[in-house]
Image (cartoon, rainbow over all chains, first blue to last red; front, side):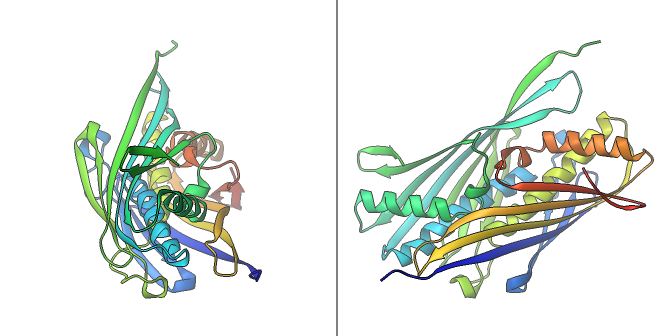
Length: 162
Length: 162
């Protein structure tokens, strides 16, 4: 039985206001779900801030890690996989080039997501789940082709590149 | 005087652990700065979670908004622009396609960042600052060419596409 094809939109909105020296208060809303979140970013003293909130890249690291983990669990249900335990280690590597004291130009180098999953299914089913979660993860799907995004799955024999 | 060209790396690490039904606790670190942040994501009841933390896309919205705002202020200093006030409204639009109840495939549609800046400089200097901030923003530089990212600057006469 072929399922019907449906398309849906997900829209998030943010209102950011510069408050402290480098602090930004950002009111985020997900209008369709009527959800609202008060978030903030700051920088540490080294970068001219007061360290009152995580820097933007810390939120990004949590967002990307959490997005993949959420889709792994959401899609596990649909693929009839029972996940007993899940841990993801993320390493995000960017570089930047700067001439003298000019504004620098940044670029992504390599993002690694190492996945440990305790399930009852075999490795190929785990890999199929990771592949589905990757395609469903809104953040991963927004990433540049210039970023190498490497997914690895921990197996008894070590790490498998997915 | 030509400045020397230097290149530097920025590396963030995350350790995500699945805790609640859909909650993930993510310990984020910026080893070079010796900074650590305890972050979390969750989903609301509609998506099977307990709503104990913002969803990953809310963190992403704050991260992207905060990243551009941070670079606008950091680079304003280098370009000798005084920013008296700064507000950024962000709208991030994704879509997803799903066949029956299979795992869906998501894709970015349009990200809009509307910038209001109170400064003493003219419009072309403001635009130059926005362009530098965009190139320096680690998150924007990681986005796919498939995402249309639109920056608009508020001027007396209305919104200018940058």
